[in-house]
Image 1: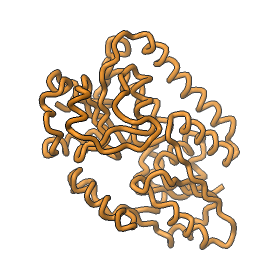
Image 2 (image 1 turned 45 degrees about the vertical axis):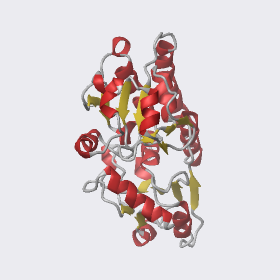
Image 3 (image 1 turned 180 degrees about the vertical axis):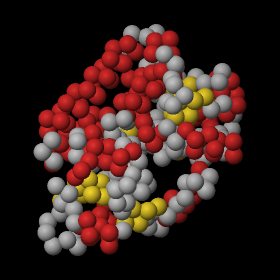
Image 4 (image 1 turned 30 degrees about the vertical axis):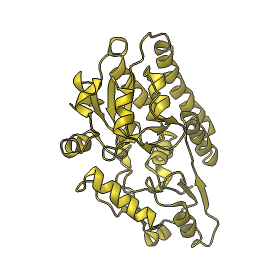
Length: 303
């Protein structure tokens, strides 16, 4: 089977199922596992995260999408040469990947039938079901089942320790810096399993902009910065120049030094196996007395 993955998360799933050799094309953002980086890249972004601030990126994204455009290009010439049998993509978010309509149109240029499968996870359970589906599509059902069992056991271990704790810190997961975004989809679940209060955000729903008033009213005891697509280094570079919500310096988490930066793109933004790593990292941030403090490779204090 010749597979094209148009999402970094599906690239991770495919490789976790032992199908890396079948992967013939990836996106410009696919960087895990490291062994995939030399595979043909089929997409490009019209927005430069390296040179633009979070506010500028937000404005550029909204301008493109409000005009019914796209922020990504798909290399159809290179795609045709790869002659794939299976496309893995998504319809969930036009900010995350090439639009589904673009992929469907590209698939029609092949003379033989090409299967286009859209993965639409909203929860951790959905992510596991996507892994199962990819296993079924690629004759790797047993490998998918083993992977899901392993991931589930890791979550059960954490939840078994956190469900008995007396205090769940009010935890603000900030999915964008400017404007501030409250978390959605699987992130509130990650917080709850890790032993935090997950009352800020909407589980199973898209992330949304929030206000200084809402953040101040929540009075977070821990803030974890997870701007979509950012690594720790990106966050630390952007943070000094960001126009953070009014009252930021008076928040309990800021006063106590409990503001953390993590590799959001690795552990929180991508709906793949490493969301479980994200839960484990959160558990270390929230309850170091139980799980041990996070390593510098996992999370660092931002303020």
